[in-house]
Amino acid sequence: MSWTDERVETLKRMWQEGQSASQIAKELGGVTRNAVIGKVHRLGLSNRAGGKDEEEAAPVATPPKAEAAAPKAADPVARPEPVRAAPERPAAAPAAAAPSNVTPIPLRKAIVPAGQPLPPQPSTNEISPEALASVREVEKRAKKLSLMELTERTCKWPIGDPATEEFWFCGLPSQPGKPYCEAHVGVAFQPMSARRDRRR
DNA sequence: CCCTGATTCGC
DNA sequence: GCGAATCAGG
Image 1 (tube, chains in turn purple, red, orange):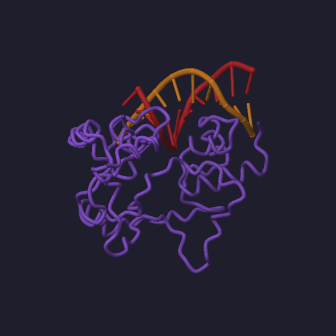
Image 2 (spheres, chains in turn red, green, orange; image 1 turned 90 degrees about the vertical axis):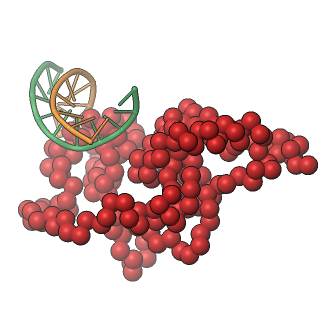
Image 3 (cartoon, rainbow, N blue to C red; image 1 turned 135 degrees about the vertical axis):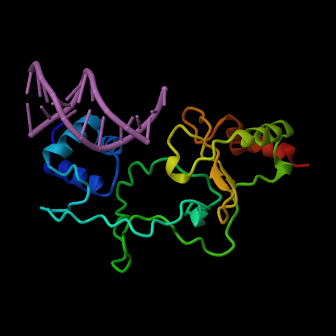
């Protein structure tokens, strides 16, 4: 693979978006994160700030510095449906084309509508007693990771109420190829037949 | 251990 | 110019 204009463009865009070198490498394919980093440096954009020819040493004013532990729990992750892995290849989905009226900025404190959906609190009557016990046990040992701390190898099972401080992700080692740890995989993935049988 | 970016240096 | 190896750090 070589650095075609197109690939370089993707590299620039993603780097500017704050994507990590490894993520960019995956996206591009055929290159390692080292290659990406190397290129980034050669292109002289190691400093993620500058867009074009920059010099503006924008005095990074780190003002307010929102309280670390305050309204933190208000993240866009509330949906019941488990966190998906990387979007991978949206292919023909120019999802990026945001309505020119919204600021593309980082994207953090999304406003949590009003009373929002609670995490996948599986209705107990549909889970096997063993799995349930196991889950409760495990949740005591949850690593309580924040959204940003999740990786492909951490359990992404949400615990608690996203609208409060009492919210985090399990974070225990996930099953290879699965988004959850063993215990959570147990309650997340159930054969249809099993569910049906358990019903009544 | 997983992951980050930074640097070096032979090719 | 390229990127593996290595370094430094979280």
